[in-house]
Image (cartoon, rainbow, N blue to C red; front, side):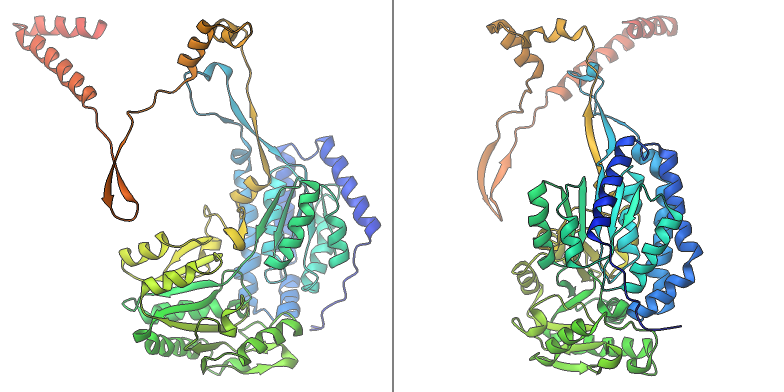
Length: 535
């Protein structure tokens, strides 16, 4: 098997133009609307992966040096599973929903129609070049859209394979793959899209955001950032270290939700470093430099970026630190005693380097997190519910995960997305469907409604205003009384609770009881109960 990445044949600007207008024509034809059609395309995508499983594993090895188990577990099997979920549930997802019942408006039969947004664009990254490329496509197809996929040029073996196979398995009038770099992406961003999903870094996201604003194309961003780990010194340090080390080593740390750095009380730093070293030695008994169980860095530019950050740290390398430029390899490395302002804290690492920043206490950890951009993930290791709640309740992040790392991305029913600089919008499975779906408000007004709401028509009168106000207005609860009570807000809401309902209930119960006991015999009591029921 060749380890040399193939040279991608980029899509021409003319081909991009043809692809866009072909998909627009297809969407307007209604071809993608039937659920049966969508299911066929989703199933074809699953078989694309299943039939070419080994070819994809080889491509992962070429682009990323990805171990076969990681290629299967993290991407291929996960994406096939996502196809199966969408295939099984798309009818339910796409079903028209009734609006919540409202006595004033139920006669209008209000509903929410689930409709595709049109022709959508997904720009995917190099680090998970199957799951982050094809996962959103599953949702877009399930929602009834036509799709342009722009995979990363930095993972040419995977991107080239996807571009080769999609026309063989899926309808080319519905989905197209565009290969290219900056010029091709710039061309794509000239068009108006039903929706754009960009997965990558904040610098490029700003450029894409400006471009999509010019065409008023809605956009979702899945970015990244420095995802912190807060460690309670009372937790199971061995388990925490094992899971943190795994999360940092998977894909050589090139994961948008990888643990980026650790915040731990100074008194527990030694114990954590030792446990991390034990986990490292367990994972790589012959040493990390000789193992085949760690991916390499995607290219030499990223290799030198990470290496320079490590060389300029003021922290102490506890273990690791070996590099091999010929293989684009950086060993898993733990750096202790890192301080704010260190090179390793200046940007998202996106590599197998783990800085440990000792802090005084959990309050200091929370303050540090809040002083920086909201991360895509925040991890907390603790068996103390109060400790975990304190961390999560006083911070903001895309996700909040206790006592593990990374696995939340794979759990069906959980959204995947950031907040603020770490992204906007949500995807994966049902959330991808929702992202690419337009919720279209709809109702059917009956003829008789004007006899009720005739007051909405001119000429306006005091009588019609009073009627509309009484029928549409909401009666507020009693005005609250505010009282200074200290605490975080400085005020406490004092709400006078009404006992009227309970009083009426008890009075009614008493009346029923008196009537029942006054009935002399069984037959009389039976007649009395029948009369009560009949009203």
